[in-house]
Image (cartoon, rainbow, N blue to C red; front, side, top):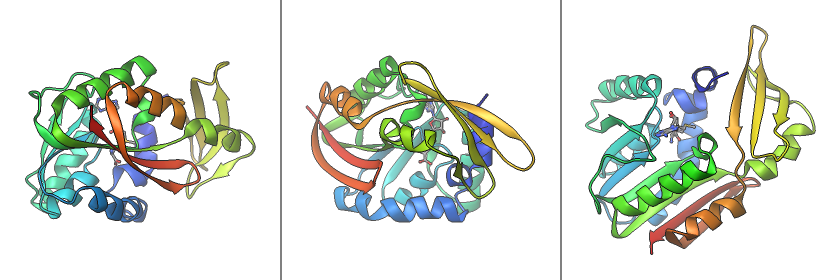
Length: 227
Ligand code: SAM
């Protein structure tokens, strides 16, 4: 049961040159630009294979990408070579950031909530608040999996190669195991289930909200400033 299979199967997260990844970038770029008017130093937190790091570098930001997965970072570094990028990719844990206080003008945290249990997400938010400069911005994009869960449970969701075969939430629906199936194989991944309200309550401990956009029925883009 693992994220490596999941990210290998879904190019939207693992191949910056795929249609699916490009679409994610196209959807978010205008919003990023709306809230990132002045250039500065960016931490792409849980950067994955680095597509958003490269986008911001191309737009004139100085970018550091951090992730705890060697698998994702190896791909990020290969893409960096391909693009002659100067983004620095660091292996590290979002719960314990290897940076000084007040190091970044922006921290980006895109599509990564499902990896974190509540006590871990609290650490991520606290660390983000610590490394952001006064006046900096924390930019968060996430799917409200709590709202999406009934939709997933109501029927098979079919994708290009893999489809959702089983949805197995725990009793309290804090986590869900999703079984993905293709013609060839199947695998299961355990996600943490986050709802919009829970994210906002936790964020309130460390930040004040400065902006919000709804991307689609279950997906949000939020901008926070340090308290
Ligand atoms: N932000 C990237 C994007 O939008 O393409 C990647 C998103 S991917 C869905 C989630 C990423 O979170 C994965 O690359 C995973 O390795 C990373 N991750 C999970 N737990 C982490 C942790 N504790 N510290 C740093 N990165 C983590």
